[in-house]
Length: 331
Image 1 (cartoon, rainbow, N blue to C red):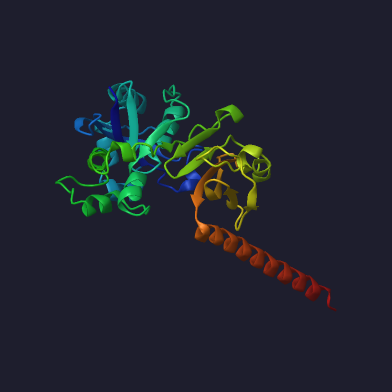
Image 2: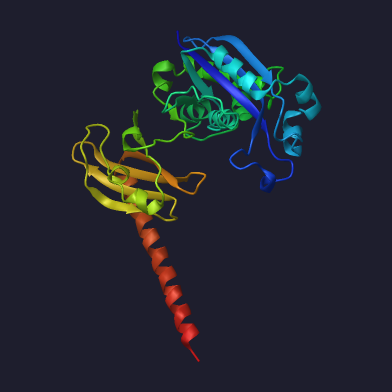
């Protein structure tokens, strides 16, 4: 039977700043908290472990202020991370569907597991539910807000504080239960999120998902942005309603070298707008997250206007450069 595992982590970091952090290990998990929900979104169990830090053994002042934890407590009552993580994964069971508030917890869980050379048991790709995203979609017109703000907004506050792992997991679970009841599972469950810790290794592993109202593509890793934009898989635009490959009305353009936009026209379903986000990997290589969404005439005009704005700014910069060169040549 499927269970929803709603979990939250607290972590510590170098008390002496980022420059003193261990490479590829910026955060050390110090607490795991989780609640288990059944298929009817009813809470059935809880899990909680403190972790005894091995790397960052001095509490960062901001972490202490937020969590009210101290190193003495963790050293006295905490388990070693591999033991706590193994217990947590065993408690989750085989048919676990992971749910978090935001997109950081699964990433940091896997990064800590890698640091301790633990086997990664998660499927690849790893799909999960970002309850913050779901709440934004169905309660906040796509805006993302903090967990405590959402709990207060829905009047779910109890005699439990925020910023401890089990309590934050509990409140996230309460919000998921609310969403599971209204608007209901058939409405929220199609909106899966993709974890980006382990990226596609090759073209065959690249991820394509169709949601109600848009499609998403996650690429393999490329050495450079230029290499990414030379890939047909990255730049093609296919209507997710009918599967037709479309010609672009506006080719991919970028205002900032991080985000790219394009526009195509499906003869059956109308305008399709595209957005590419370049995301950096730790070694400075990149991967692409592309979303395609059907839009109306107004949305198409917004893309055209954005391209015109980019063209004007580029022309202004070029004029300024030419003027600067002429000024330098003057005696």
